[in-house]
Image (cartoon, rainbow, N blue to C red; front, side, top):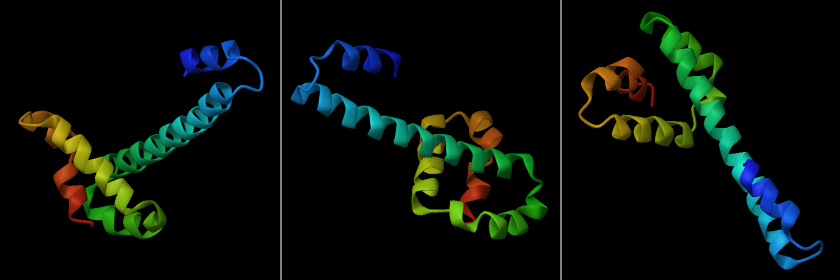
Length: 98
């Protein structure tokens, strides 16, 4: 983000490139905020015993979107064959909520 901000500052004022960079920066920050929110939701499930997930799912129903489950699937795919890493995230159990 810092480098993008530097490029925006270096771009000529009023130029199309600067406007495009600013739009890109806003979108990138928005995506970063969404990913942080998804990570927070996943962390809440990881910190909660599985027996209490139903109540947590009810409380966080608004956060359990298709995008959240895509995020979890991506993390599980990134873990690949590393069973310890995949189990550490308990992602397979989170999929049962979906």
